[in-house]
Length: 247
Image (cartoon, rainbow, N blue to C red; front, side, top):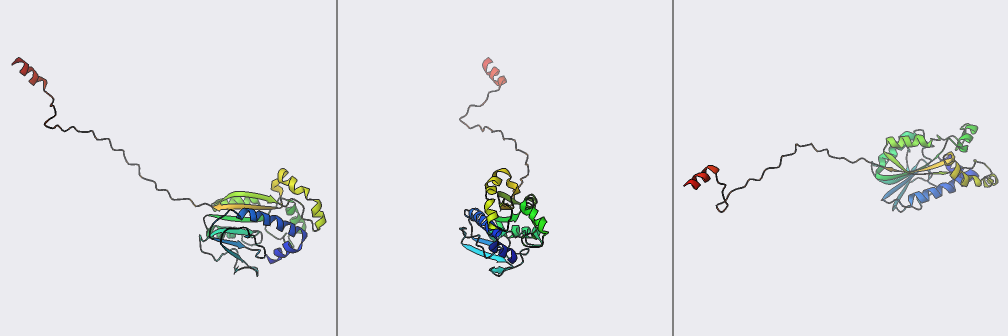
């Protein structure tokens, strides 16, 4: 992950991508509220800068982290975080599915998960095949977004927003990148899912418990019994009435 951080800071495509991802995270976290937020990885970049959550923490295996830990085994209590950021954390771990399970575990119900990842079905994915995964960032996992959403569905993480970015080829020269700026706007409308990087915002849903009551047999409504009082008129028997009339 430290090598990837150096690539973001020191290369032309890395700096261009960093600007786009910073804008994505700034917009994604601005309206998320709570008490605790953690960014996992890339501690040199403050992707929580626009968050309104009062307590921020940075975890990971790099030297800038507040909490040094294995991303696949987070040292946080279950249901303790309102917001968790995973900037390319799934791309640079040997256990991406385990990391996603840990993210679901530490999030509170209705907590938010915000992440970015490389899209294998893009020009960036083609460059990964060209470089044969020998260097950063091409040595990453490049988890497809469809596969990622399947994983999240199994963990009851509901996707609420998806953003695609970086449509230009990852040229090493800044002037070549500048010439391909038109592809950013065109790609957003023409081929959005072929972007080099995707951003996802998800919320942890927890199914509530619903009591199933037994279907009791409906009681028949009780008939009202008229209680005769001394002042009420009593019904007269027909036989008694005839005898009275003959007399």
